[in-house]
Length: 269
Ligand code: HH2
Image: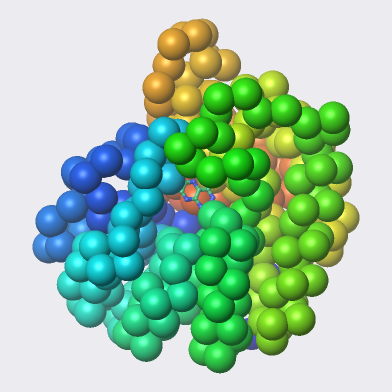
C-alpha cells in the first residue's frame, strides 16, 4: 500500500528512544519495559507508527556498535514489533534486518542509506516503508559551522539523488518519504527556510516527514538564545505550520498533544 494511503496526512510518528543520551528524553525509555509501555501508550494516543531507536544522533554524539544498538532495541522490538506499527530508527543494515524480521514496517535512516548502503537492499527485501533524511556532515561535528548557498534546493537535490539510489536498490518509490532533517547540520535560519520552502521538497513528488519536536531551534525562536531543547507549545506550533505547508508525517515525542493539535489543524484546513 502506498505511503500516503497507509499514513494519511497528517500522521504522527511517536519517538521511542531506547538510549541513555538522546537530546530531550535520554534515559526516559532506556529500560525495555518502560519503552514498551511508552510505545503502546503512543499508539493508544493516536500515533500511526512508533519510531524505535537505539542510537542518539544529537549534535556531538558518537555512534554505538551494532551489538550495543541491538542489545538496546531487540528486547523492545520483540515485544512490540509484531503488535504495533513500528519504524526502526537506524543506519545499520543488521539492526534493520532484525527489526523487520520481528515485524517492523518502516526503516528511518538519518543517513539516507549512505552510512550502510546494504540497508537499502534489506528494506527492499522486506517491502518496508522508508524515510530518507538529509544531514550535512555527521552528528559529532554537524553543528560546528553548517553552510549552504541555497539550503532548500541543496537539500532537495540531495534527497532526489538518495530517492533514485533507493529505487535503484529495489525499494518501491511509493513506499518512500523524504525528510529535510531539521537540526542536522543546520542553523536556526536554515531550519526556518526549509520549512518556509517545504514546497521545494514536495515538488519531488514524495510525502514529507518533518521532525521538529523539542528541537533547540524552537527554543531559540521562542526567545531563549541558549536553548538546548524546545518547549511543547513551540513544537505544536511548528508541527501545525509544517502540516499546513504540506508535511504528511510529524515525528514527535508528545503524541497526544500533537494528535489533538493536528486534528484541529486538519479540520480547519
Ligand atoms: N530527528 C532525530 C532522530 N531521528 N529521524 C528523522 N527521520 N527525522 C528527524 O528529524 C529525526 C530523526 C533527533 O531526535 P531524537 O530522536 O529525539 O534525539 P536523538 O537523536 O538524540 O536520539
